Length: 257
Image (cartoon, rainbow, N blue to C red; front, side):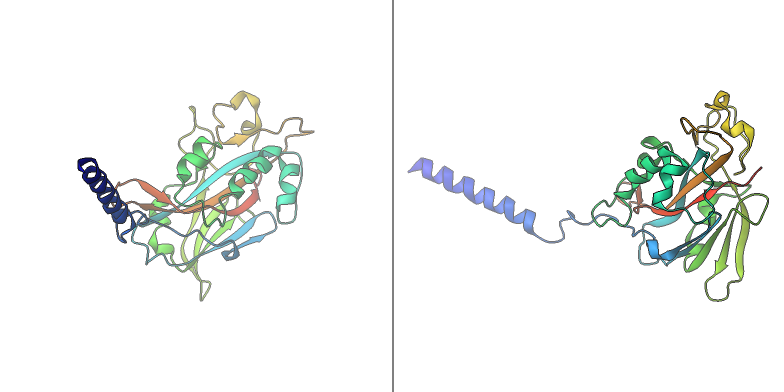
């Protein structure tokens, strides 16, 4: 009879442990989550302008700011109208490959809490967008909730970001001049987003760590930049960053410097 007692105790312990796993509130599903900016909230115009409507993240206590990842692509294909997926390979095959890679995450309900820093910067050589003389994390904070982010690559000497009121269209903040990343290889390049000879020179490959060449290009007299935006937060348990899935802002044609 003694072996049966041991078996009974074993199964009782097993069932108790299994029941604990089924109890609600054990923290299995309690992880921070940030929703992405919906594709429908982004308006792209021609190849030089985009407007991003930023909804409120007030119900997400983990939220800290938004981040924008970018990569520049050398091209020989003039795309005048708004860029689309069908034109990415014409612009630069690397752009098409990068977008295909990110498309699994855009508007995904399952690819949540992926480390977007690693995904963009380590896996696909993207960099963080910066602003001239301003901390972009402070600018793209809760202050932009329920506002429009206006990315303009066409009407000024250098591309800018302006924050406007959704109701009135009035400028709330900016315009800010966009800057390339400050985490590039030394020496640093011209940090403005403008086409110039130094940007496309093969001799400057280490300096232009944010530029993708186009193999076999008939000419190298055009450059485009793809930009993606994500929401960023802080996990209160681990103090590590958490991210929303990305949204494509636009693929902009860079103006002449």
